[in-house]
Length: 291
Image 1 (cartoon, rainbow, N blue to C red):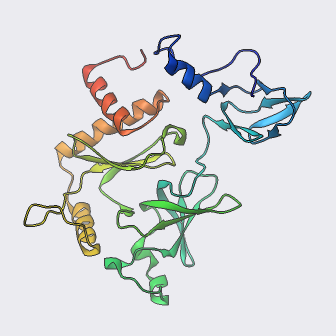
Image 2 (cartoon, rainbow, N blue to C red; image 1 turned 90 degrees about the horizontal axis):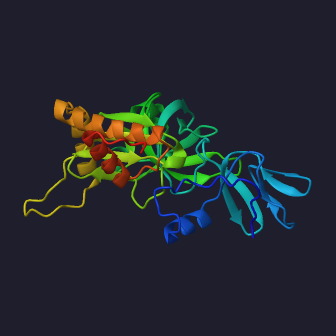
Image 3 (tube, rainbow, N blue to C red; image 1 turned 120 degrees about the vertical axis):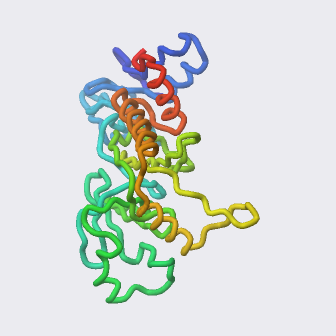
């Protein structure tokens, strides 16, 4: 059992009753330590990232949350570069076009890799990539382009390999980028969310890059039922969305979401669709968000 000596820097749960079960559960799950604080003096634990041993005691070298996997104890920094996991949805910027691959800035320790074989061809064509495709790589993505992608693989050296094979991923246009702390983004089942009543879509990139844009129009069949979008329909919808000028009403809604995200990031609060909507309402009411 982990033992914390001295002043324990636990999360601030002052909004909950002092003796509530919720507070006890949260305190048992999340233990926040500061540099130099003793994590445990018991023998048998293995030293992980963010820790060091001194005089037989395991101490924290960074401020963060204590994590324990079997006998391995580590500290996850509260503020750090993005550390990816397979399946993460990310927003990135193309930094370089190389041989059969793109390098993508995803706010990590190093650029991620997006291979030519890991992108969708026009109209969703399924075929081998040719030398002609290599020559036309900048027609897919060029330096400076923003894209959404999924982490396909994390190599032993920490390099992340991406893919955009899903029709929902690809080049991002007609929107607003905002950068927040990656640790504030909870891993959800759905990171491409539509905020009800606002007409705004948000891509909650696990890497702290968030993309805000107006909602795309749904494709509806003649009988009123929504169709599954084909590759051609997705391509047509994306082109139409990119070529349509964002009007003043949409820009106002995007600005409301941007301000809410900036407020959550400044106060170091978790970002989710619910917290975004609550913050928008609180800002409009003029509530004191620091209370």
